[in-house]
Image 1: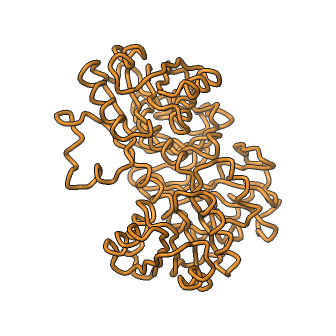
Image 2 (image 1 turned 120 degrees about the vertical axis):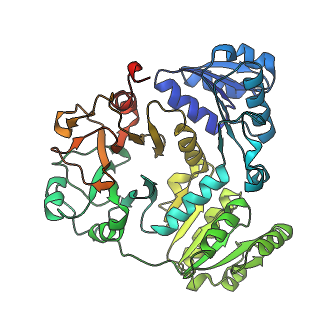
Length: 457
């Protein structure tokens, strides 16, 4: 597949990295020659320097015979115009755009993006993706990562195993036998900084970070088995009243048992948030000021969620919140170099906007009947959700008969409308929905197992 990625920043670079690593022919376009050089020096991609919305620049990038264009520059308007030019001049069949401004995404203007108006096939909103990620973190506060699949029926949770975990030094095979009625499977383990897919005879040790697939109804029981106390989030302090903070507060207001307070430094932003919210108390002040945090009730809060546009403020406010007695701190971190500081500083979970945006875009560039993609860690692994078609190589075969790569594991299976715990005897049939955890190097082979053949069309 030929793909043009417009924008060579962190998101564009990650998209190019994924797609080029899977054997696609990728061209990166950016007005900054240094960013283009970084992409061409570190990735197997072609680079073009120039404004992505200029027709001659897209022509130089090979738009006339491109299968897909991903517009991920820093400018919403450039992304929209780029998609329009790609459609009108070059007839590019599939166009994806990243749009930040919420005005473009208002439901009243939902017909703006169509073949007759602005021909954008898929619109990705980083703010909305981050807000949803924040809500997932609040829903599973004991997990450092959480993502739902199969329309919310299955959940991938990341857990840090501590010394008091009751199932330490137990093999995964024994875990399955001990908890035979629990629909949960350990699909990944990060030990001493290295992520791998475990086999049935692997044990779990203190300090391991594990990824577990579970029936969403079994999440509380799964947490308890791995030594995590289940706590309700009833009081939440939100730092930052921008698009992300506002979206989270609105969602929390629909949960009658949750009371939220928001802190926003800029007066005009605080006033806008106060007008938009009904039950949330909005404070205009500095979230790093102990007095302001005290006024927000930080010592009685169940969680602090720091989602300003300043990483350092988010990190320091999270640390101050924990020091004041708040048991859970979640912060937004744009700069990945800060991520190793999370554990030493006692911050329970972080949200990486780049990773959430990359996952959203990848969801729409996969082959076959892929329904969702989630990037794990620093693009170390991916979780792929797909519908099995009659021509897929795995259709009509038992799991023991399928040659899954060593670095891949089936984590969830929806069969005839029921979520089942897959074992070696489980047969995968046409129409089933599978969710597979795969190390990045194994993604092409997993896609081959899911991909339809030409005669299907």
